[in-house]
Image 1 (cartoon, rainbow, N blue to C red):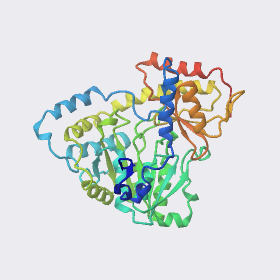
Image 2 (cartoon, one colour; image 1 turned 45 degrees about the horizontal axis):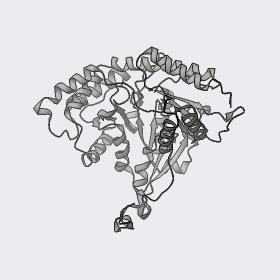
Image 3 (cartoon, rainbow, N blue to C red; image 1 turned 180 degrees about the horizontal axis):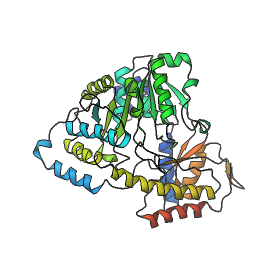
Image 4 (cartoon, rainbow, N blue to C red; image 1 turned 120 degrees about the vertical axis):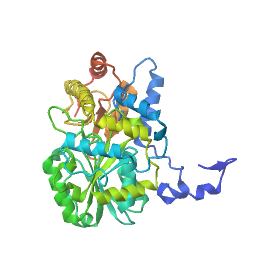
Length: 417
């Protein structure tokens, strides 16, 4: 709260309603990730000698490939790369179009008019509503999901309609269950596959249905695909844009953060419908001046070497198998996902002769505070916790040690489901 000598100043009255208006900063509610942060701090203080195993981290545990890092160093040393990038360099856009073709069999993407770089996926998710949403318009998003997807629609005076992802429907949204009046009023539908947090993968049949639904109701599809190349057990990476008609109805957001261990580099791209790409480019041009050209060139190098992602996927696949086996031995019903680095499992209702858990958050807090194992709870559609296989572990021996330690800490508990 803005105060001067303990007195509230006029600044407190000037905040926009979208962030709380005159009550900004006075909300005492503690949000999920802040609760997790506080619980971790308390656990470390109470048990300073015990290792905290962080299975909640949503970012890679390793560095970017040495070749990508070397390319950055090379390009950063060139004087011609020092300036503003604006809406991106041709080399990166061409690499993105080729990447979509080589990895996902996407045909006919024009790098000039149908690709534009973004400073990671998050800004793209945030900016796209500015292209479409007027007060009263609707964005449809799935839950559980990334909350930022709905934030800017609300900022712009729009409304957010949520569709639950349930295990019974393979964590795919039931588009037919969306009320007719919502579908006809909606401007945007955001999807995310492989999915955070469920780890679920889409199918070509599902995406084909999405295209038909979008055309029927004239809704723009935004497919957020940061995990698209991280697939396992022979499942070929699937792009929404590879489905006939997809480019007529929307765009796909790609990021190098997860698939290339480049989270902090902040580089990705928007591809697909040329009119949407143009509108996004115009809005983007009024928000940022582009990512550092040397980063774009290093990213282009990465996109030309998809085997880097394949090696990363091999590691995550191995870790998933270890974690699934361990959790099932402990009584959970865990199933290895076909993509992403997230494992989504139903939370227990309690522990025999121990505490009960009314919510997944209760269980997650118990794991952190009592067992020093951090996860992320989701109570939006059932009660689930998300484990991430991006935990810190250098090498296979260390991976086995971490998973064995989880089993040891939880092995004396009999969970009730």
